[in-house]
Amino acid sequence: MQSYIRGVALFVIAFIIGFYTNAILMVRPPEAIISLMRTGEKTTDITKQRLSDNDSNAVKISFDGHKFDPQYISVPIGKRIEITNKSTSTLMKLRSNEEKLRTERGYGESERFIVVLMNEGVYHVDTESVPDAKLEITVTKQAPVEN
Image (cartoon, rainbow, N blue to C red; front, side, top):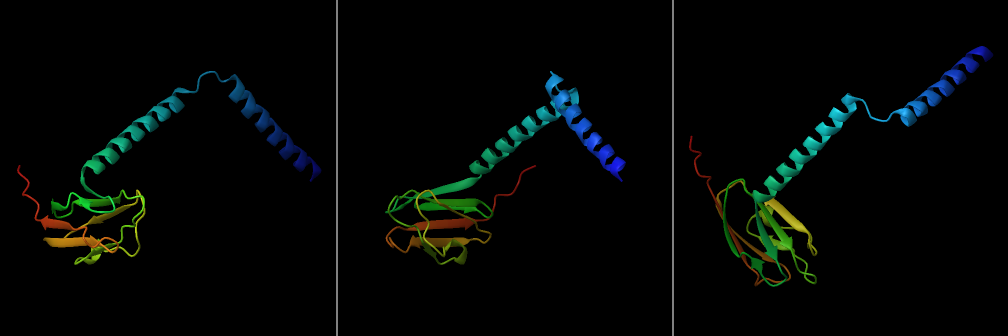
């Protein structure tokens, strides 16, 4: 039993010495590791591009504490709508004739409310704290795709 423990201990010590010796002496990583690192960079670039593309697919609306900008928008079904509170002093608690456009709580400065509407219609939105701030969202059918 004692020789078994010594054998395991020697194996662990040899492994640690070999690992750190290799790490210290290895000047250039193997080509396989370099290619994996390059693949990771490409994946990161593609992900950043897709995220920026998604941002352009959203209709952005801001609330400054007094009004929405823009106040009237028309979007196709399935388009993402982002409403951002730019006010430093007024919470943005949305009220609407559409349940998806109502918020349970007030959104603070720089917080975004994001929604996708899947039904045609005209939806009216205002805020609990500033009822005179009006937003009208018209959702229409998407244009047919041309081949």
